[in-house]
Length: 368
Image (cartoon, rainbow, N blue to C red; front, side):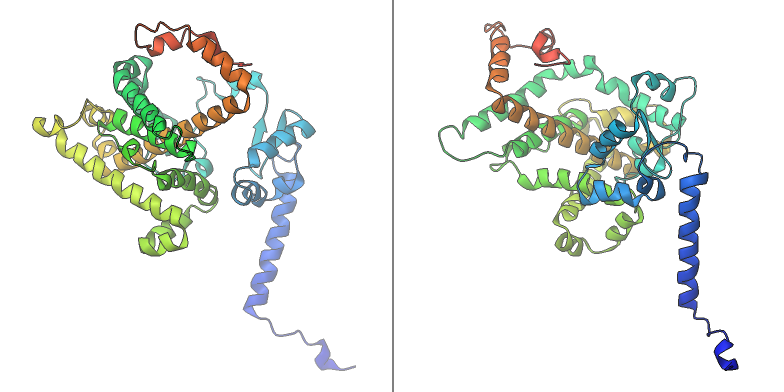
């Protein structure tokens, strides 16, 4: 017998590391599938084993995980396991249990910090801290406050209509989402800061702005599991990042603009003449005059708040208006029904929001 053949092969650190990681991965999979507190709940085994399952649907397939979750519920029932750490419940009766005022819950960090605005209200994890900041925002977004500024909002809606009329009989196609992104952004920026972005004045409806909003939403699917990725991109020169991903370049420009805006608001706060340059008292002026702690009024935090308010107020409204427009054009009978209801308005005066709120077809939760 060759005794040398029985000698152990020399160990290499790389092979040891690979073996250790493989053993860890197997052990982790076993734990998640059979010993985790969530192991008893139904759902795809792959989703229970790894978060890469969610990453595939949200990042690679561009936000399709919510539809995959709906499919899971059809297969497995009202409670399904959608990741190694999460359950998803499709049961209205469970709402009061999950969001009970008697047992408030902190936010889940995995979802809260995916936009890279960790100091904005949307990303605050602690319930009490979030409630403090949110309560400061509530009055400004109340219906009574919106009605006070309804003339400014109506003026912007009229401007959009005038811009669209310019295209009549020209044969030039219009990208509705670009136009609606300009409208929504002008409304939310003017409403919250007293100085709009004036995108509706641009001749081409600023298509790169709509792309920026969509790009931020798409990028969040990558930043959610890899929050360090955003910090890494910020470390590179902006022109390099813009060449690698034009959407990220636009996002960085947007962030810079938000910083300039909030600095101008902070500067004007102690100067009545400067303050007069703003069309009306703004949400951010209100924050600076509030009883919030000084650290909550910092330029960095408020710049992040601007990013969230404008980004969310622009993207969501633009998407909703775009889809509604498509739905009405694709279903002429729905469009005709809406027109019939609008024709009932008194042509002798400008209709206000309160008039539209009385119209059954517009306020019904089940439009048919």
